[in-house]
Image 1 (cartoon, rainbow, N blue to C red):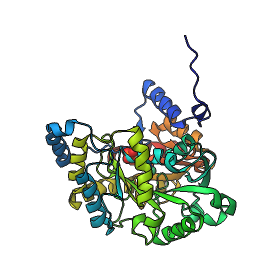
Image 2 (cartoon, rainbow, N blue to C red):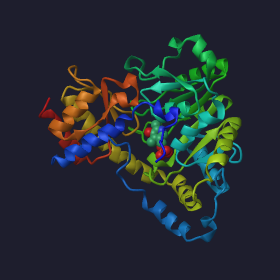
Image 3 (tube, helix red, strand yellow):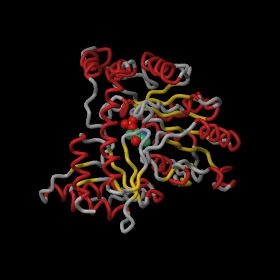
Length: 388
Ligand SMILES: *Cc1c(COP(=O)(O)O)cnc(C)c1O
């Protein structure tokens, strides 16, 4: 038997908190608890029929059975450009400013390999999607955590970042509408971001996965709409949350052509693109009319209202989400993130995600996902009411 030893980049990886949550859930189910799982950031609503039907047809075409192109089919990149034009009034060159991704997670995880040298600094929000710091670590970079605090509307405060850190930073990850805090960013915030990036020569990577899951008909802006955005960075997007296609694994990056080319160079050496049938179906997805999307948004809005109003009535402290399918809720004063998650799972059979799983600055909060029916959400609130 050989002795199998993990590379140090994996050995020193922070422990994956969500794995222990999974174990807790399994244990609760085994002990007979009917668990209402509000911990998963994965839509429970199926992919719309017209997209599934397009996939069925595309699968039959032998032309799609061969290796796809690295950067994505031209027709897919054109559909992305068309979507940006229609949705954000942003013009993109499908040849140089659009790149297909095997889900946006893939692009986010890989991009530091293109631009970050060992020891370089990457600015990362905390709490935040864990892949920003994981990708940074794999490239040998160091994450500098930017706390997202409620008193600053969960936006990073650039003025408290030391000049030395900004001067050494290669890249910054930003994500609005934000997972896990559910807030959106204003045009003014993005303008400030562009100023900081230009002054310090930092590549901006904006994660816009949730731009289409918004409430009260208030459409979030795209970073790419802000004048000068293309000079400093790119935007990541995904079909996962918009069209309930998390299992399909398709997304895209758009923006600065040199940054797109750098990421493309990493990808040509690591993967061979996305199954063309999926790209064909995704073209149909991107051309989906607003009626289908507003129906999906209406479903989330009813769930949001049920959970927000319910938890508010229980006296819990939370902000009303403007977008995303998450609620970021402060835990009662005698708990921390983990103890509250355990408490409501054991006593009420409701599963939430502990906020510190998204970084230390998430301590003191839990995240509820709106990926269950209004009925189940109301039941969850009732059960929590019984134990508070
Ligand atoms: C879900 C999610 C992604 C990844 O989505 P893909 O399925 O990989 O496209 C990226 N960023 C955030 C913040 C997410 O929540």
